[in-house]
Image (tube, rainbow, N blue to C red; front, side, top):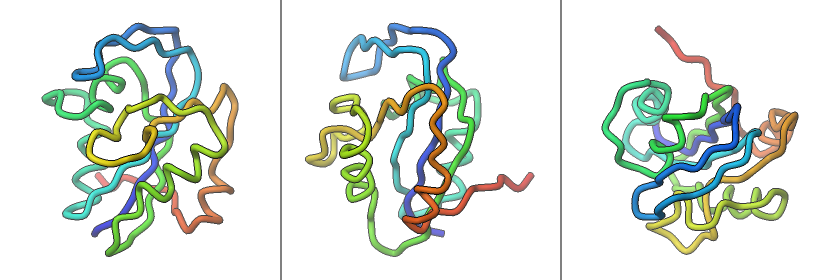
Length: 135
């Protein structure tokens, strides 16, 4: 399966995290949305994000050491759409600059969405489905 995914992430405390090439970044307590894509194995990529132990490869890996994925949404597609959806979220929420966007021209792919934001209906209107992990 190929496509785009959005991780909804909860951070329970304010944190200062070293995020690889971005250096130390301050993250406020609250909810975040991260937009990614996997054009060669969507299930495997999402599964990797949900695992606790892994090599720190991407910016999101550093955040997920301290934060918890609360929900995952996905959209199957043969076309890479993550930047389009990142731009849509950028119009709605504050972006964490350069986070997750080192290989594109986007401002960032991580967004601070507040404390009690419910994105499911909005993401559904964009064609995303809630991901249910099969064990």
